[in-house]
Length: 305
Image (cartoon, rainbow, N blue to C red):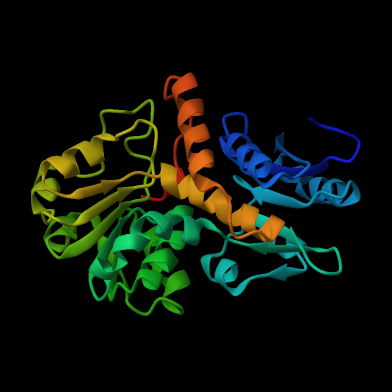
């Protein structure tokens, strides 16, 4: 129950009305026994600074940041972790010892979490990332941590793809840009394929980013990871499993990046991510599986092809 001593956390962005974060976080908070409340607050791009000032003034404990603020918030912070600076995006704000805001990115931890039990299969292998929008930067950092030796990022827009590779090459030396037309030949070598495009997201349920030739090139036993989680399963994951691949959607990434943020805010390592996951599934079922459904929403996403 909310009381006069209840402390606030929030996700800020625009739009946020379909965000699952309040569901996940309030379940996790309750399991920790904290007198906290997590809200979704719509904040337009021109009011970001005002919003941070207001959240600071009322003593908010922490903040999640989503579109369109994940890059714009960085110069407003007293500290940005090296990981978030490499990725070029912040999704979690926390209090420094002097009370000012610091920022980090928990998307990398969220992405890796469902792969960690079998991570050795990716070490030294090739990862192919479909799309070069904002979400793909976090995925590049994640597959590096998994130990992938070669990382290929496929895009249709040569200029955007070149800019993406230039941004990441300083900290991801094994990264190469890949023209979409050359994708089929490289998929034969991939241990991990990650969809960072919006293709296949509801309501475009019947679409897939891979054509039949590319699907036939997938290695049986490789892992296909789709950041989209609405619908479940996506068309891509249906196709991949039919070709003998292991499939992973983006819901667990969403849950685990939220759990990682809650660990930062609470200082507690034992966060009930299972309860958070169940809450997310129930919320999706109540919505009929509709709404935005990608684990790393980010401003350049839709154009990141």
